[in-house]
Image (cartoon, rainbow, N blue to C red; front, side, top):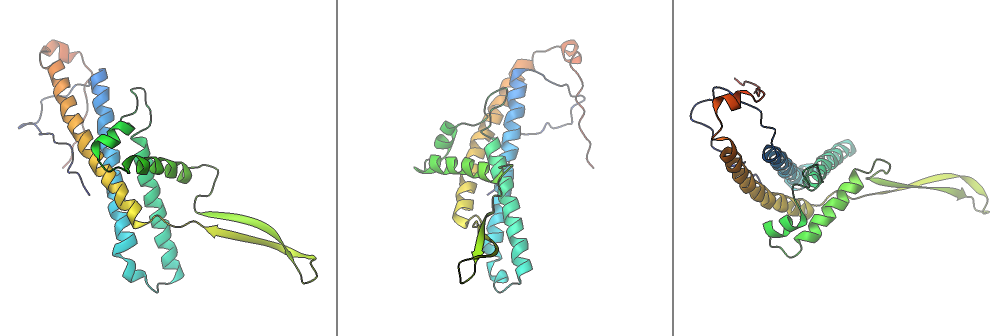
Length: 217
């Protein structure tokens, strides 16, 4: 499900220095990169979920209760991360939401894609609700003896089903299509920013704050 990453070409030689750009266009590029990373997280989560829901199904047949319980925890945790990452791409910031419903319908021609998108946002609200347990509903009642008198307190629960394979695959398809759209915008935004700064003099660039980049081996 991976989209391959932004189509950026690194310079032939490492730059002698880096300077921080604090312009609106640079902030827009930063938001696009964060959105792309969130979509990649969604894709990674969907790949993991497909493995959990389908790939390991035969191995779980007849498994002990503890194993099934761990499986449920993994599925819920990964699915929750996918929903949070997906919804963040449409959350408003100072620069506005990185993606909109129009982007969803333009990235994927499926007639039902907008409804799927809205369902995902509702599911995010369900799993991220700070006050409601998303996986189980509990009810408390009074138990009666054969005469009808109260004999104790009973607690019942209704377990919510785990996410299904179809929903995961549809989520991955939407995230993949949106990744391509965002990737194109990243490329265009980089070209725009370079057009803004390429005529700057050394003195003008030296006035900008240095940008430290962590070195890797």
